[in-house]
Length: 516
Image (cartoon, rainbow, N blue to C red; front, side):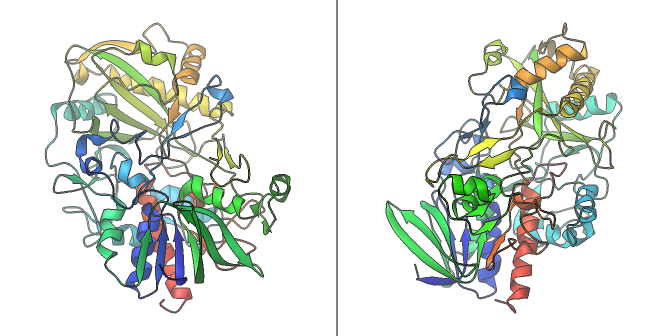
């Protein structure tokens, strides 16, 4: 490790992998600080590893939320990758962009330069998607994304069930038609899982101008005269300081990036002073605006086991527009899981009610929720996990939308195409019919889609944290480029959007620096 670098990248997850690869490719000296290991365990590459061998493992931060009053005081598991590649190393490999309308909504709200047309070149730059329309899809990017070569009978039946319930099919959810049942594009190469680190960072790690340090716990960013000049971190208990000559780039995600800002004195001034932290910049929006796709589950017992894919998640899904939320983007996702999936609630009593043989139709609210949560400090010790409070169902409108989505999921679940497996609805159960009872079930059975965003959002209003170039307000030499900068959540899995954000941010940084 050198004493200083052009750029210090804090977080070696999805965005950090992209950022470090692109900046070092241009000749800049780059240091990546990753809290987890640099080398993932071999089983992280097995298609069948998610979720049983990855969630809750040694390469998962294994966060939990604060008790949620909207879900009867439940505590929810919030898995995030703690390894090079971050959550792209432990997720379900779904590579799905948001809808065109999502990004156009960002631009209309003040995030100039972040519309769909603005981001499309970066989506394309990131991927190689064989057989897709090159007007929308990439042909030479690091991420190799494609549907599985073959499709199971269960996956075919699920698509047919969506059609029987009156919904469309799209050949490519990332292409022109972005609503309907679709085959997943997944990140894999030659039968092995591919993380962002595998695609971007590992091929670059032989460069003399790039260093990567694992097991590095960042304590705080250091500022002089309003400029971020260094990063303090520990490895094996030893404290280190490294200088950043050009910029420090936070890519620690929607939980980690606001946590680092708050520890470093950037955030709501009163809260920071109350914890004994010197205020560098009073930015009340840091850690606010937390959003996730809340997910519910419809559980069936089955006559025979259903097998749809190697990892248990059907390779066919559906992003549908129901009209319960305004706008052109889809507002509900349906996903078939070929086993009875327990709620992501710690100690949920519903887990004991799951059938031995069965399957799940998961349904998630894709529209930006009215309920917004927060990331806050539990104290000024950097080793303390932050307080994660998504505020599920704090607003009744989100629960009302999920009740409508449950009705829609039932219409798909009762379709004739699934009759070869369907035995009976177990949860919530056929006797649970009126909306009040369905709402009560959802409060017990809802949880995360593992899609946190928005905690350092783009904006020029008092709660904005970064400008449209992703520079942190009130200081110099510091940017954020990860899921935290999203003004609001996109109507899809978030990883593909994070890659595009990092691609565009790297180009912005290099343009501002004259190429390096």
